[in-house]
Amino acid sequence: MAVVKYILTALLVLVEIFLIAVVLLQSGKKAGLSGAIAGGAETFFGKNKARSFEGKLHRWTKISAVLFIVITLVLVILE
Image (cartoon, rainbow, N blue to C red; front, top):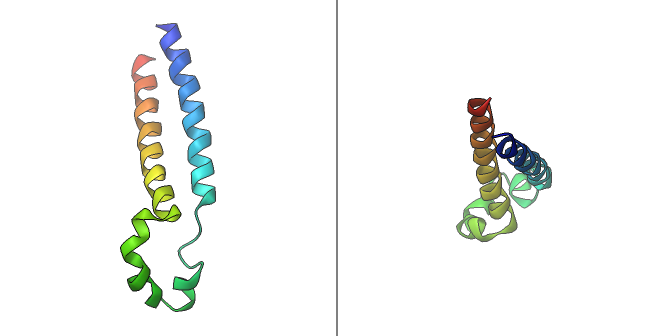
């Protein structure tokens, strides 16, 4: 059982580092062209937002946050 805890702890540290990096790579909501035009560009570029780098970062943030919570809960249950 101790080996499983060590593996999950190592995986948790990797997920934490990845989550921090992904969040820091994202730009703020008011940054860029859409903030300068007050959202006018958002309607034009909004169709391909999920395919852009920002869309991928947003998706990876959600996935890594869920992984963080699940791994943390499993570690607490194993405690």
